[in-house]
Image (cartoon, rainbow, N blue to C red; front, side):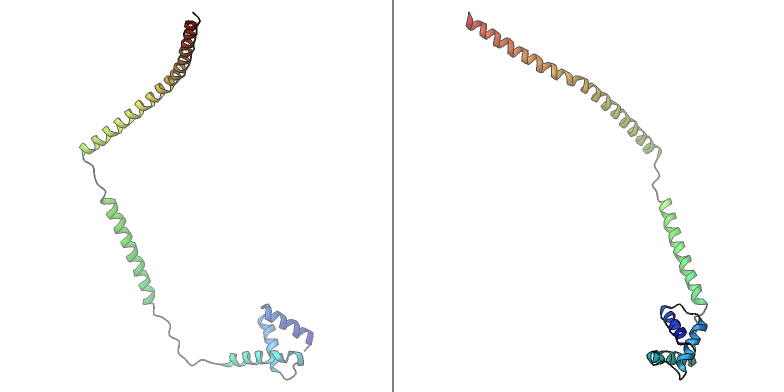
Length: 157
């Protein structure tokens, strides 16, 4: 067996890039008697893998019964029933308004609309009156000037 080929396969083996045939070649090389001295450290690994492949378990394996899978279906059905009952009870428990209550709600909505309209109109009127405040400031300044002029004239006379 070519030593360079074995070293390449060994490197590929530790990277996880070997095929089953290549791994069999490595096991055959390392279980034989002619192993290169610098590769002897890997011999126990492949000898142990060879022996582990020959082991047979005598323990009986018990697989779960199909009824276990049936229980999962029952849990799903029970969960769907709980969700259905919850949604149904919510839908049917909504309070129903009497005709008188419906009329009262409609009257309230109409009154609210009227109040909003009144508020908008009052705000428009208030904004147009705001300019009168500027006019009163100007007239008060003029009246102060007139008072000053009148008092000056009285002193001069």
